[in-house]
Length: 112
Image 1 (tube, rainbow, N blue to C red):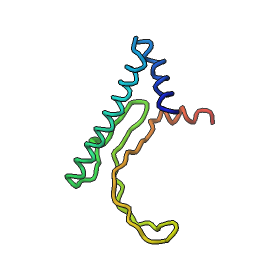
Image 2: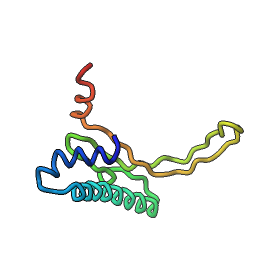
Image 3: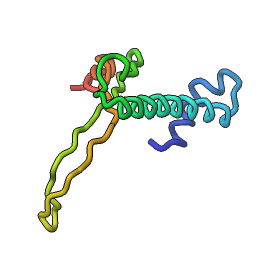
Image 4: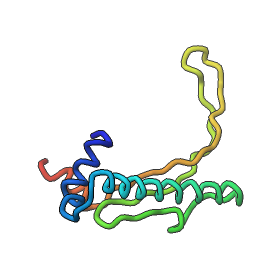
């Protein structure tokens, strides 16, 4: 699904019923994702500055019946270059992991 398709679905489900334009609906959706990104970027900067590993509920964003986004720290690791075989070090970095809620898992697997 593309961003345009996603925004069209949101507009059909909510925007049109509330009297919003497609641009207004898109602005709201963009603001939601920008807020999430800003929050996780801010948390990663704070953890990096304090040299702490993210843990506990402060590094999570939970949306009921959808899932949980977690700020996670990947440790540095050594890998071999596929062509040359030379050992490289991939630096430590932060990432966001997602764990779907039980409801979502059930919906994904209900036709089994």
